[in-house]
Length: 85
Image 1 (cartoon, helix red, strand yellow):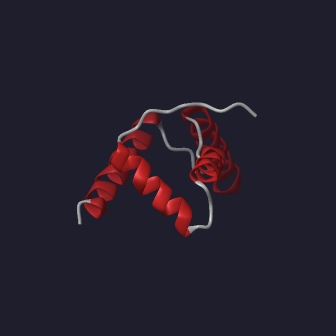
Image 2 (cartoon, rainbow, N blue to C red; image 1 turned 120 degrees about the vertical axis):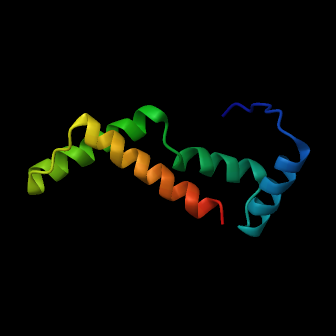
């Protein structure tokens, strides 16, 4: 396994190290686990397409692109509302 140097603000490193320590992990192990759990944009798009296909197969739900954009906007609005608290 190769190592990589990543330059981030000291505050971010300290925060990540504290989170890692609270979970009983080194910063290196925590970041490796984090990388394994996050999805790339391509992986997220693939999962979304699979979910839409499953919904269509299950109950015939097949939103148009306009409906999808509207639903995405509504989700973004709600997430922004919650995170602003």
